[in-house]
Amino acid sequence: MNNVSISSTVKKYPKHFPYQAMKDKILGKKYELSLVFIGSDRASTLNQVYRSKTYSPNVLSFPVDASLGEIYICPETAKKEASKFNLSSDGYMAYLFIHGLLHLKGHDHGDAMDKLEQKYVKTFKIK
Image (tube, rainbow, N blue to C red):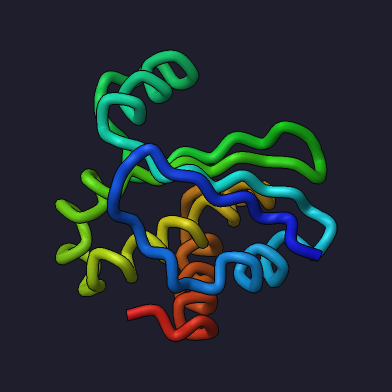
């Protein structure tokens, strides 16, 4: 079952990652997900509207219900941050996808989430 819908409002984003497998491993096969790669203006607008924050985030995740969610990734912001995490730009966006999936699963920032992120980075051989 293919239940990850990927779209983009930007020209360049990583298309080669196993997004479906990543989603299935973390959220299960029945979970439906929309993944959207967006520009920094759109990311800033979403962040302002839904979180009252005034910057362009690297990733935003929104649960719609128990089996449906949305993840937005801003490649422009991610590219600026990737080197801090010793990952390629594409690898960092895959990491951000994992980060968003874990938020949709109900995890908050902290040691437990950090350990899960590292586990999945290794599982999916993200560099």
